[in-house]
Amino acid sequence: MHKINLVLAMFVASFTFAQTVSDSIVTNPKSQQNGAERILSGNISSGVTVGGYGEITYNQPEGDNGELDVQRLVLLFGYKFNDRVQFVTEVEFEHVEEVYVEQAFLQYSLSDNVNLRGGLMLVPMGIINEYHEPTTFNGVERPSVDKSIVPTTWREIGFGVAGRLDNASMRYQAYIFNGFQSVNGSKVLGGANGLRNGRQKGIKSTIDSPTFSAKLDYYGLPGLRLGLSGYFGRTQAEDDVEDIDGTSVGVSMIGLDARYAYKRFTARGQFIHASITDSEDYNALNNADLGSALQGWYVEGAFNLLPQTKQQQLFAFARYSDYDTHASVAGGLIKNEAYDRDEWTFGLSYKIAPGAVVKADYQLFGDGTDSDSPNQLNIGLGVWF
Image 1 (cartoon, rainbow, N blue to C red):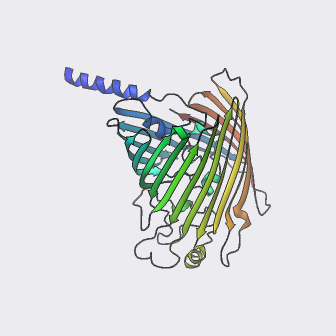
Image 2: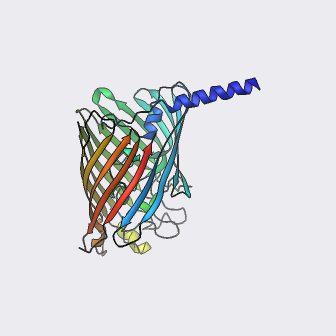
Image 3: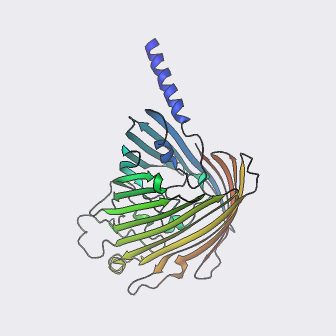
């Protein structure tokens, strides 16, 4: 019995220590980390690290009933086998009843600057797909560019290399992934949501041709972080149809992003363009309306209304977004102006403690049809630990 108690005590001590390894939330874009990076950078010699983040939201469109939702609760687990080998996973509960594994990868460190990774990983495109913990962005909802153009949260199974070159003030990532699924008994891709419904998410994923993804981040200037992302390949189709014209399309996506912080002021922006080849054949075969190009961008500015000496922060922010899933169309497809959308978001982010935020914002929606889209009030709670 004494031996059992001793083992339990040792386990609890190790477990508790692991939880406190990365207890600070870094907001400076130069050194900002996401949940997985915080686990990997922990200074424990071995053992378990635990973290998590979550969001509870209230959305109230004008003229309609509101919606309350536990949007997501994510549990992060890491295990460090030794100084070279670590495992990271995220288990996500969405809307209370849906469960997904968002990340699950093994990292082997060849050196301080070269890390091999394999498993289910985030595709490095733009800002939010990698940095979506609720205390890291303003607004109750993630920017729409990172839903309709970059299909956040975008993760696939693959392998590759990642690291930092501090002498050059650069972080790099390069991976081979399986691609989007384009047909699954019927069409998967379409005009309104672009590539979003083609995410395979590591669920018995089909692969017939790999895709390549890479990102470079530069942080050599004070307070500034610049990112250049790329994703290239073809969508995936099942064996019995993969040789039929129109069952797959080519995807080339380029992203530019910037984050800046100076005293109480922060700003960020992002531009994403995706070129879709063979969309005409895909639309003809599947009776679909997939565009031949998707494009979106946003700019945001925020100012902390509280003194810098305060631990709490109250950011007032404004963001303008413009995104079009029919930025270009091929063949006889007629451009749908309703897919050319824009929005203004104005709000507050009250960071009541490092890792805890209360948010409120108001959104104005528009599209190319000049129709009156209902505006929306959003209120949310977010945590990250």
